[in-house]
Length: 231
Length: 133
Image 1: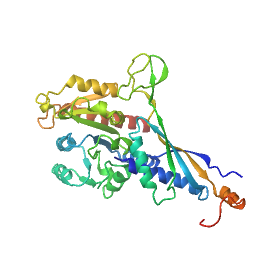
Image 2 (image 1 turned 180 degrees about the vertical axis):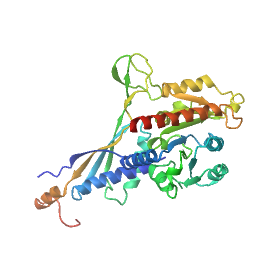
Image 3 (image 1 turned 90 degrees about the horizontal axis):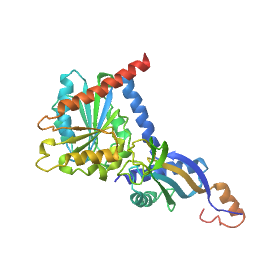
Image 4 (image 1 turned 180 degrees about the horizontal axis):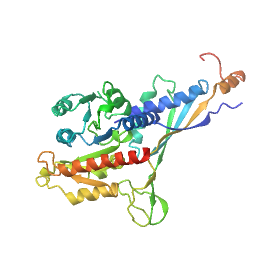
């Protein structure tokens, strides 16, 4: 009589729970008419600084915007963003180096999604772990700052492959740090051919209008698709 | 490092599957790991060992099959395996492509188990003693 272990096929995505939750979040956002944008980058690339500039502009344009901000330990980023008067919540992850769909879902408690047009989710500063987790967002933006070096995309190709658009930040420092801009574009196109790339400086405001226009177009095209599919 | 969370998810999935089969013993867990999964093999193996301690899967082996990225090349009209995830171009003709066919997998493929029924039989045939069971 053999007691050899037998192989039983399972074929299951390990992150099935997260993916299911992200799918249900995406459905919830869509039903409520909320366009969701997530930001990923290494720590200090300027996610919060960019949001600080973005939120007031959205509000000025009559877009009801809110933000969820992931951080390992502090509430500093949420405090910075709350000055915009937009609803902001901090997700403190403790030792967890990324946001997942469950954290996003739990942090939505108490918010009426129907009262929002757009939601930003700022992930924990990390170019590795967030790439595995779908948060139910419509658009994922990966930021890289000029101080990080132009080969960042080659070092973290996976995160660039899960993002929809890349933004090069701190362009006001490009000259000082002798940033190789064509090299950065080449690196991005090497790991993600055809990826749209925007350049800006949250500090000086250079490139900010183009960035905001880009987001606006993304939101408009989603609304247009939604209308045509329901109409 | 999120491999510990991933390891916990693997253990949860495998335990669930094993308990569906009447609490069978799990000897090994087979996983497919895509080059674009964002998960590092060695870190995952290390985390798995730690995460298994004190669970139903303690002592089980994690067998990882690493799978490369496969893209579709529109010039060759064929699927091609990438040489490197730093360079998304066809290894044959050099055409750039971001059309990923596979390579993001993080899939629990199979578990190696001894089902309870097997255990009962082995007890009957004297291969295992009931002591300690």
